[in-house]
Length: 150
Image (cartoon, rainbow, N blue to C red; front, side, top):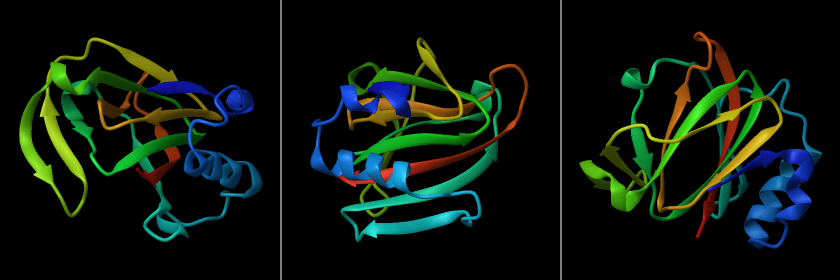
């Protein structure tokens, strides 16, 4: 898991050409008037979902991880905590869904990162995550979730 502000991305450049492409896309496009939903960048190799939701208490959220894709979350508006844990420290709640590329898992929140406007987080398959956790009180978050084929 990597978390930082988009202005510091040059420190991580070179992790992957596809991750670099996602960051470049973020830096060169305006998302203000873009509708929520899935948007292709490079077929199933690289695409993103623009999502909006209200943050909630951890008990109202869920743990997930992926096999085929790296997630890159980028906050456009609002702030949230994202809990994270290693896959090996969790137990499987729902077996892997091949079509939608996710496991549902269960475990305790031990660690979380606060993301605000302009922050990004890169999550690998070993990084189980719970998004949408409220910081102070529930608030609207608008963000991009890039899916980067491994």
